[in-house]
Image 1 (cartoon, rainbow over the protein chains, first blue to last red):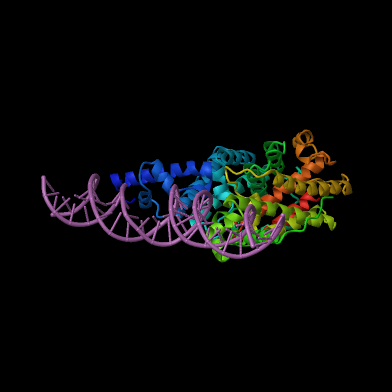
Image 2 (image 1 turned 120 degrees about the horizontal axis):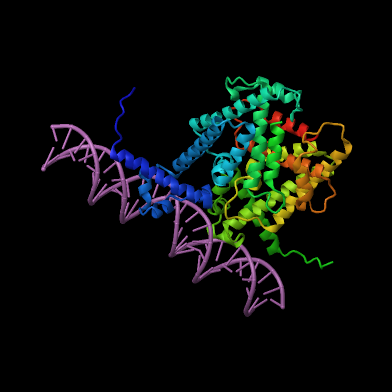
Length: 223
Length: 223
DNA sequence: TCGCTTGGTTATAACTTCTAACAGAAGCGC
DNA sequence: GCGCTTCTGTTAGAAGTTATAACCAAGCGA
C-alpha cells in the first residue's frame, strides 16, 4: 500500500477550517436558502475578514458545489446504511422522507430548482447512481418475494416496460428486470413528487396530512 | 355598474411599462433563474437608469411576487382553457406538461425551491385552488364514466381514503367523493414528481425518455 | 396659465463577490 | 538554531447589486 504520510498540522488545520466553514454555510442555507448564502457573512461570524475564506474555497460557487456534493453523499450514505440494516423498499421510503424532513433546504440543494448554467460534476452523478442502485436492489428483492399473485400497482403490460427494457443505461449492468426498474423509477418520482410539494409548503392550508399520502403511495409501491 | 372612467394616458403608459419590465424579467429568469434577476440589468436593457424601475416596482421582491402571480394565473388559465375545450384528466395532464416544458423556470417559480422567508399572498393560493378545482372536476367525471369494473390504480380500501374523506378543506365544497379527491391528488403529486425531475435535468444521461414515463403514469391515473 | 403629480435623473449608502498587494507566522531544510 | 519558503491572514479596491434621497423636467388638470 502507499505510505501513510502523516497529515501535517497545516493540512489538519486546513481541512478542519473548511469543515467549519461548511458548518456555517449549512446554517445559512437552512435559514435563508442557497441564494442567501454569503461568504462575507460566514467570515464575519467566524471572526475573520471576508477575503480570508478564499484561501479555502476559490469561489462561492465552489463552496456550493461542495455542499451539493456533501448532500448527495449524505443521502447515499443514509440510504445505504438503511439497506445494510435490512430495510426493504418501504423502509428506504421512510428513510428518505426522514432525511428530507430533517433539512428541507439540503433536499432542495439536490432536487430543487436548478441553476440554468450549472452542471453537476461527474462524481455527484456517480453518487446519485449509488442511491439508485440501492433502490434497484430493494425493488428486485421485493419482486422476488411477492411472486405475481399480488396485483401490481403498475400494469405489467404497460408500454413503458418495453421502453425500460431497451433503455436501461441508468441501471448499468444491474441484474434487475424491467418490472424492478419500473418499480424503482416510480418509487423515485412519486415519492419525490409528494416530498418536494410538502417541503415547499404546498400542502399547508389544505388540511390534509402529507404523511398519510406518502405512506399510502409507499404501500402501493411495495404491494 | 361603476362609471367606466377612461384610462388616462399616464395610466396607460404606466401599465404598459410595467408589462415591458416583466417581459425583460421573464427573459432574465429563463436564462439565469430567479436568483439571477437584476433590476439594474433590466433598466439598462430598457435604456433607463437603475432607480427608475422603483417607480414601477417598489422592490425586487415585489417584482418577483408579481411574476409568481402571473405564472399561477397563466397555469390556471391554460388548464381552465383545456378543460373548457373538453379535455379529460389525461388531456389536462398533457396540457400541464406542455405548459411546464414551454418555460421550465416559470414552472419552478411556482413549484420549485421555496425561499424560506417568503409567503405567497392570498390571491395566488386562491388561483392555485382554481387549478385544483379543474382537476377535481375532471377526476370526478372520470370516476363516473368508468364505474368500478376497471381495476383502479389506487386501492379503494386504502386508509388514506378515509383520511381524505375527513380532511377535505382543500376541496372546499366541491361535490367530489373521496375516490375523486384521491385521484386528483395523485395526479398532482405523481406528475409533478416526474415533471420537476425532468425539468431539473435529473433524467439526462439516464438514457430513458421521461415522456414515456409521464404517459405511463397518466394512463395509470386515468384507468 | 398655474400648480400638483408623476417619471426620470444623479448621488450615495450599504451590501455583495472577488482580486491584488502586503504582512506575519508556521514549517522545513540545512 | 537560522534562513528560506510557503501558507494564512490582513487591508485596499474594483465592479457589481438593491435601495433611498434629492432634484429636475415634463405632463395633465383646474
